[in-house]
Length: 478
Picture 1 (cartoon, helix red, strand yellow):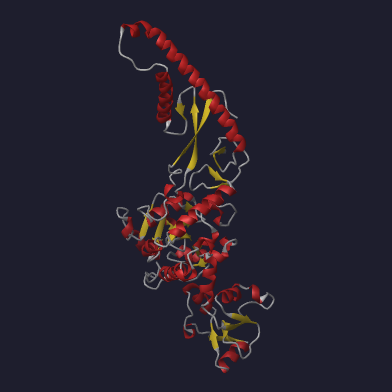
Picture 2 (tube, rainbow, N blue to C red):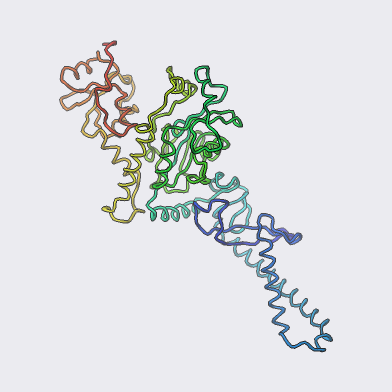
């Protein structure tokens, strides 16, 4: 494995793992290649330390063979012999060290479990693996891959530390969740006024609208986002996870966290995903049972829906409305914005606080590692529409399986019971039209007739909203 002109030195020390010290807080092996020909370390700044250590080792042996004594003429006469003796001792010592290193290299390589790789080279024994083994953690270091056993070990160790501090993990989407961005060329005439209202980069923490000429984008931070991040950081270790490119993700992280307090290097982008068009917790160094996710798109979290809190999309720019097929004015065109006090982020912060409080409730004991935040999330969500029995009328086609429709599933997740036909136990009929048979039945029997948006509001706002705020139109009938 090793070439004749190189030697591998395994150094174990409590150093930051590639700039990730605040996150892992673990002792990890760092492999350093030392070229004998150049007496320098290829990828480390520790060459002086190693050379000093070697010199000290050699000098100590030579000193043992030449004990201190008073100066005399005999010393002058024997100087040449003593020098020769010291040189012989040093040569012998070098040969002994070479032998020990070679034996150690062979034993280490044979027994190594290869926990991870840098540039396809094991971080423990230095063996090169060309099969792309392990999971890539490019957001930590662009060449880092970790084996499944090592990932499990790191997660177990990190979650123990986190739970002792009564914290969980929070994975945050960027676009339409924490902010909204548009290309400069997509700003229309009704939004052109924004170009003169952008905030300065001299004090990012006080701004919310930024023009980024380097990437030809304009970004609007969602109202309440700074307060949200500050308060959430007391309960969670936070990650950014976006399907955008890394360069864009880094720029957004700078706007959200100019002091690098909340995210450090925990910024995951499209290139880090292990499945196409899908996000996954396999690249998050947190156990699934301790992770919550905030995202506006459920479809990208097929493997982790139980961890997901679905966010109402933030459409500040007109291009965002067009992207999702909405034929309406954007917030920027209306020269308005979400209300900080009761907007989406303020609402979800309250939910997060409730989940955190329930998870760490001392009445359930202190074995936090045995708990699962997904169960807490499910229980709180299931209380929102408990006691409601819902029938849908002309909300989805008769050819489709009703129980497979997303609104049916949403209602059940919120704690409601769903049925196909009306009876005396039904409390709500959900329809877009007041003239259907089931809609008329609801009105005649004094039951609630509500628009499907009533369900969506309960889902996004985490509370049962007044039914009268979601009336059904009377223009169509059956």
